[in-house]
Length: 594
Image 1 (tube, rainbow, N blue to C red):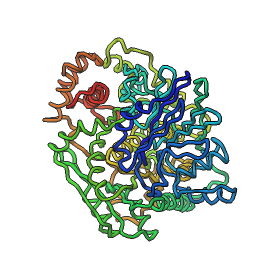
Image 2 (cartoon, rainbow, N blue to C red):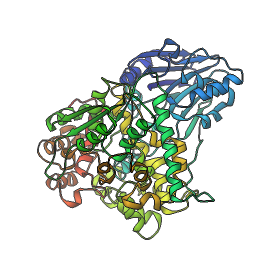
Image 3 (tube, rainbow, N blue to C red):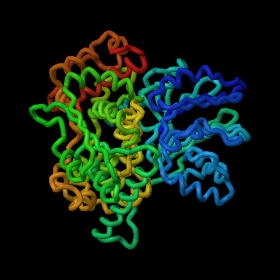
Image 4 (cartoon, helix red, strand yellow):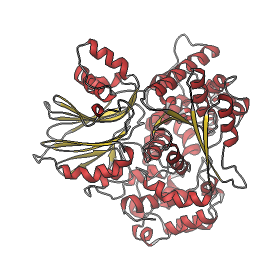
């Protein structure tokens, strides 16, 4: 796991290595083990390394193989099988890294090699013979890849901070990105971001930069949601999904030359990872949990359930309790680590947990993706029960605010048409899904999840040089799960198949507990010091100068932060959303410290 960056010119200028220095500094925490720069004529590639596979200098990047040069971020879980296949075809390897496997695979199969890669990845590959730059991203966008077209060339990097460090990027607000940001609770689907000058490569896409500067982008993988024929019965489905999940968990434990732990929340998803690893014979399992202070309405930790799982499987368990004053003090720091503004209240939790866990291990497995793949959220049954066209069933239970309220929220100069509704409507109507719920879950897994829980976990863990692996987004598991009839996902409050797998493996109290969000009550119930902090941000002189939000709407939110209308359909605080967005802009874009 690493950070990559680079610059390419097509107007005849030579690349400047000095241009990469501030970019690499902005990526340093993603890769604390090594740094590399490669430059040739109009192209320069940079790399910050977190050494996980082949810890020797042979794994140094950017890696050169003849006319091909690669800067790679991620992990290829089937690299050993691919290496054996490539060796049989005559390729000779000088390292034991998955990076070199990508280079040889590209040499053998060209960009079609992407379909053979099982893992999480974002990479830049320069082909000197063809004078072409290839950028590519994994099926679910687990690894980020941003780019910025600039005069005469292109910049790219693993985070937005690295692009901004060049001083060459247009930092104006993109109205389309703003509409998505405040409608899809922080999600801005690719290629847009909140900034006009920054774009991101969509998941399951590659981009080719031609010698004349032309950019060509193509999708290389598509998720379908169709029933197989013949259709397995329920017992067969349980066994099929169990086998795929077991394989995914095992691969993510084995593909490392360093110890691998588990972020154990106490929910069924992360607990299943622990249980399946124990069942597979994994030894000396290490698990980690974080908790926060309670609020009168809600507990702030899940220690009770995580402790039960750790005790049941005899793991080496570490738990960390964070008081509210510590969480508030560290919140700006966590926001500075965000590549894009993220509203999920658990971001600070993952950030503080990753800080502690990184002192013990370099790689962890997490349960992200299970709720989207196996229908675990409360809004799915509400959508299923609704009537009308797909967008009419989706929007009222998911959108944070109507288009009319969005117009009331932001300043007049950002007003545009309802682009989010149009985007979602088009995505739901794409062919290859048998039912409405198949449409919803596919959109969630291929688009929404990329820029919410997946990005959040990547950013918060990589801020501490900790690699997070997500077995529930193993592509073969997901493809098989999307053959499942939706009713086998939605039954029993959601994630029915996972509960069937867990029964008898996990303690009953974990299987039977209701679904809850990662708890941080202080950011859900906007009171006291947290409310004062948000008020200070939104009424600051910088916020007034920026003029992003309608002052009357902000004042109304500040007067009634816990009114029913001040919470979104999925129970997010609208005040927190506005404060977080403004705080991110002040810290990351404006460079103002809090």
